[in-house]
Length: 314
Image (tube, rainbow, N blue to C red):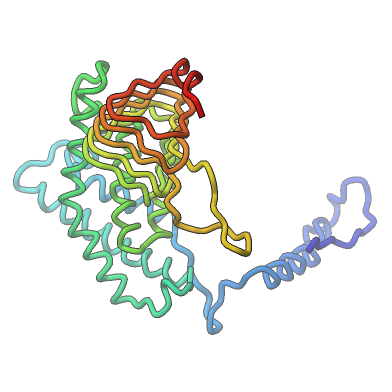
């Protein structure tokens, strides 16, 4: 419904009027209130719901990254006596704040998945998340090694860790994916969007990514929710692992969560600008050339270029 403001005759500029009249604020505020009441309410049982804070999540991510790599993202002069204290301090700050954000998100959504979600549930979820951090760090180390091996321009590990946007995106995704698996899906999605903003790389937190993952350059990479990526996969800028069709139910509504993105097996390389769509499989050890459009399964150890893609039947 369109809410039109009543027109009031005024002089050419109206700058001599107080703001209340200059901008017709009473009418504008009333129109926005009506629009809110017609579309949604952020109140339940008379109590306003607080949305999770993107700024708080950015601080949480920074603290977690400092805890995972204290000498690179934290303080370079840490030694054996104080490094554990520093890590513990960062973890305490991050996990306390994360617990609050998880609780906020559950109450804010207020759907059937979060009905009855209590503060104790947020604490338990955050504990489970914390228990995964050592394994997450191990995966990130494998990603670092893959970047060093796969990029001739990489001179050392610190350069990759603090300087490569692909590493920033992967670190964020490793953390977001755990939150997604644990059910904190709004928080996970916000973490993914923070990474997207910071790096230009868009990875849905639901995507399953194996060890030794390397995104070179990275700008414009898109990886969809149900994509599955094996070990030791390397992709370049502007690669899309997307959906080709969006199935609907009998009423024409999109079916949510249906497997619709590609499966990329181990040891695959996908060059810049390649677009791979649908629930297809890129076989192990294959190479997908730049700017190729792929919508069919690719056998293991294949090389797909623009020429072969054009000549392939179907």
